[in-house]
Length: 71
Image (cartoon, rainbow, N blue to C red; front, top):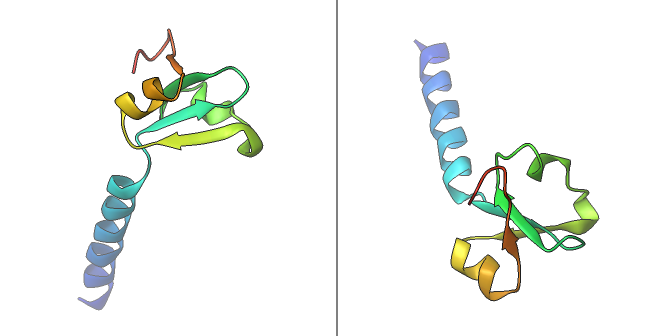
């Protein structure tokens, strides 16, 4: 029972972390932004990574959408 309860708590923590994570990721060099789960977003170096909470925020800061994931 304790293991089951621990698994439930762990699942809730993981779901909460996912909700709080940035939805969009930009590349400071290319000025393109992606969905956070896009293949190209996962290849961005930490030093070039910019996180956005909305598409509108990314566009207003001069970033253009990725042609692969079309955020």
